Image (tube, rainbow, N blue to C red; front, side):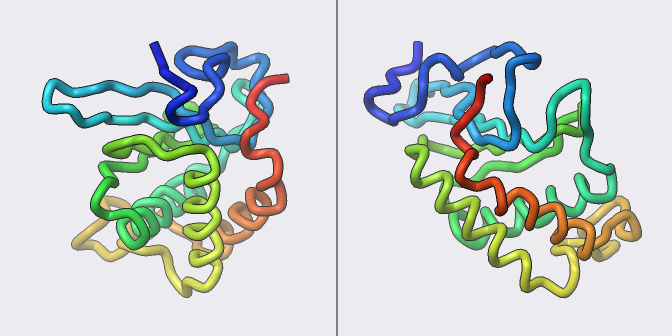
Length: 160
């Protein structure tokens, strides 16, 4: 079970939660696994759209995925494993070594998103680093990110 007193995440929003009660956008610690070597691997759920009601356009999803990967590599490379889009097109999974407190994750995401607003192109969209290099749009991704930033005060409000 999650020891939330050590890392400050709400135990009610840990693990599987009712998708009908979610209030995106939000970030939450979804799962934490302690390895035999003493490390922790944490899965975060960056949910941007209401499941079964809304979705992120695939081109925006793909572009923001690249922005998240590049941003985490820039700001948090020593603990970053991966960021990946959800198949339901409502958000992203972020996988890190070790756990971040909610305030640390909020600051990190905000830094990545603010930095991305200055980009002139989507990171890693070249043929040698992307399987669909023409399937990106920096302007649409930045517009989407601005919407997320406008709602940043609610990023920890997960359930109705």
